[in-house]
Length: 264
Image: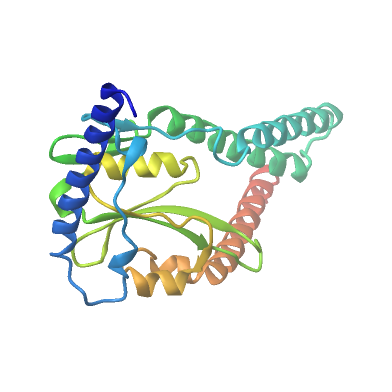
């Protein structure tokens, strides 16, 4: 026989789980059955993962995402070293080596990326209050969503491969409304399964957790409208156009610089 305290604890857990299941099933009964989204995939959050308190805050964890900070720092230091070496050997030249400008521009972009990544990890936050969900991306950049419009949390691993970057995957955290449309989406590479379950529990909505198997962008767009934007379906074309424009701008800038140094 179990002690009386253990029986009481089991009874409390069972009562809490039953109450949560009842509320979620009642909510699920109001879901529309049309559309392409399979509402039966939404499951309630139970057990320890459901033990959250309001207000609830969820922040990204840099240890979960790709190790871009270390690799980015190495790239930055390499570019800075190359710039210093080329400048040292080219001080007597009246015209700087064009490679120097390229390395300098590359170092600047890598530095900007590292600064924004660090700023994001420091300031980004998903905050759940009694009536709203607030997503803060950067200081002063936030979005508020009414909790009454959120029907569930959906996790998807999107296949974002291109000819330039094959075998690329992107973790997405989505919030769907009662019509099965995406009302909020975010890149979730700095979040893990427990984070998503805690968020669903704080929002008091079920979750469809599927980060294990990739889905095509077109399929996800058909399943949940609003999850994929037009540019994401034409990444290859936009990449080629952007590369050509960047080359053209660099060439024009080089011509203007050379013309300014050699007037007439």
